[in-house]
Structure formats: C-alpha cells, structure tokens
Length: 182
Ligand code: ATP
Ligand code: MG
Image (cartoon, rainbow, N blue to C red; front, side, top):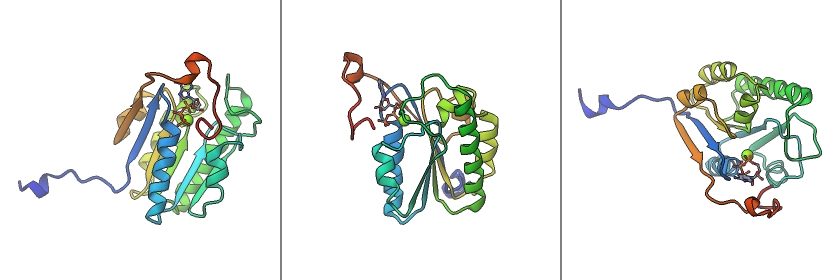
C-alpha cells in the first residue's frame, strides 16, 4: 500500500474536548472560535448551565456577526453550585438548540461550553450527545468544554486536552477577576 493510501481518512470536522481542573477550557474554545472567524468560518457557542451575561465573552461575542452565542439558563450569578430543576430544564433547551443548529447546518464550529459538567451532573445524557455528534455534518468541528468529561465522550473525541491545575490564585483566596476569569 502506498503512503498516500495509508493515510487515515477523517472527516474535516473534529470532536475536541477541553477538560480538567485547571483554568483555560472555555478560553481555549473561545480562542479557537476567534481563529476560525479569521478564516470567515461561522461559529456557534452554546453555554450549558451558564445563564449569566455579565461575562466578557458574552459581551464581546454577541457583537460579532460570524459568532452566535446562546445561553438558555437565566441566572444572576456566574457559578452553578448544586444543580436544580431549572438547570435541568435549561440544559434540555440547550440540547434542543444544539439539534436545531446542527439541522440548519450553518456553522463550521460549534462550542458546547460546560457541557461536560452538565453530563457529569446527569443534566444531559452522554449517549444522546454522542448520537448527535455522530450524525452531525462531517465538516463541523464540535468543542466540548468543562470538568469531568465522561469516558464515553473521551473515546469518541479526536482531540482531548486536560488542563492541569498547577497553581491558581483562588487557592490563596484571590477572588475571580473581571476580564481574566469572567
Ligand atoms: P476559563 O473560563 O478561564 O477558561 P475554565 O473554563 O477552564 O476557565 P471552569 O471550570 O469553567 O474553568 O471554571 C469557571 C471559573 O472558575 C473561571 O472563572 C475560572 O477562572 C475559574 N477556575 C478555573 N480553574 C480554576 C481552579 N483550578 N481553581 C479555582 N478557580 C478556577
Ligand atoms: Mg469554563
């Protein structure tokens, strides 16, 4: 077999997972969105669990034509705490939104922010997400962020990066900073 035939044929789009305890998952995904936008690609960001618009990425991305950003939760606070029924229903809305966007096939990159947390809290089923990802248009890249990405998701991913927490200012009581943490 020639070297050319040996090459693994993969679809254009990838499944990318940013997980782990360290900082940088959401910002890495947003960084990739900006890179893709530079090539005139169209990007959608669905923020699972988050329902807070006083965050830098919302304020900026909302004004960018090529990037659509959605939140389905309504909350005055940035962090989730323990999930409740409201989180469950907003996750179902996010899932519906994801299916609608995939059906429309308008985006090159879809970012499912904090979806790994939503799965690990049992607000969304891993099996359902995997089915959606398997059936998506092959050109689409999907990025799943959040802590505790489940094994099934890691298995179907093409790229997995685990952010490892070496040091975080929070550990010595320094509070979240505007423009850096949110
Ligand atoms: P970022 O949004 O800055 O890329 P992240 O997506 O990796 O961070 P999340 O797990 O979504 O982090 O956490 C949300 C918030 O918690 C962010 O404001 C982030 O700065 C902060 N954070 C991230 N990692 C840590 C950590 N190891 N200890 C304390 N706070 C953290
Ligand atoms: Mg995050």
